[in-house]
Length: 293
Image 1 (tube, rainbow, N blue to C red):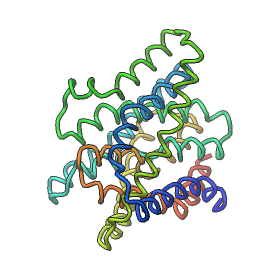
Image 2 (image 1 turned 30 degrees about the horizontal axis):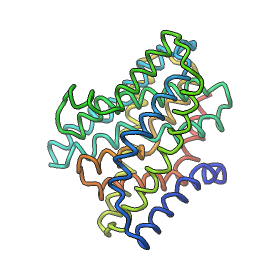
Image 3 (image 1 turned 135 degrees about the vertical axis):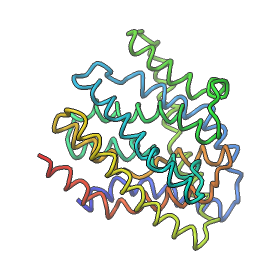
C-alpha cells in the first residue's frame, strides 16, 4: 500500500519540486502564470470533466446529496472555531471543505475499487468543483457576489459543461479535444506555482502545515460519521465517501489564495504538508475504508 500511495503522490511532488527549483534559480513571476491558468486552463479542465460525466448513474442523486453535506460540514465546524480563536475562516474554511478529489482522489478510487468506481469518483470531483467555484470563491473573496462569479470564466465553464451534459448536446469533437488538451495544463501549472511559493516558507509555517493535517483529518472524520448516519448508501459509496472526506486540501485552494491574497504563504504550507502526510495516512485510511465491507 505504501508503494501504491507513493506512486500516486510522487508525480505531484516532483512537479512541486521543479517549481521550487525554478523559483530558487530564476525567480519567475508566477502570479501572471496563475492568472492565465485561472482564465484559460482551469475552466477548460472543469468544462471537459463535467461534459464527460455520467450524471444519470444509479445512486448518483444520493451521492450528490451525501457528498454536498460531506463538503459543507467541515466548514460549518470550522466557522465557530475561527470566530472564537480569531483564526481566518477565509484561510481555514476552504482547506477543510475542498479536498484533493481530482489528481489524488480519482487515481486512488480507481486503484482501490477498480473501474466500477469511475463514475462516482468523477461525480464527487465535479460536485466539489461546482461548490468550490461558487461557495468557495465567495469565501475567498470575503463576500457573495453573483457578478464576481459570473465575470470569472470558471463558473460559466462549469454551467456549460453540466448543461450540455444533461441536455445531451453533441459538442463538436474537435472543441472537446481542444478543451481537454488545454485542461491538461491546469494541474501542472498549479503544482509549479505551489512549489515556487515554498521558497518563502518559515519554521512556523511547517508547524502550521502539520497542525492543519490533524485538523483536516478530524473534521473529515466527523463529516463522514454524520453523513453515513443520515443516508442509505451502498457499500461502495460508503467506502468512497470515507476516503473523500479524509483527503488533503485541493491544490487549487492555493491558486485562489494567491489571487485574492488570502495568506498564500500559509496556504502553501497547509497544502504541501497535508498532501505529503498522505504517504503515511492514506494506507491507514484505505485499510479502514476496505474494512467497512
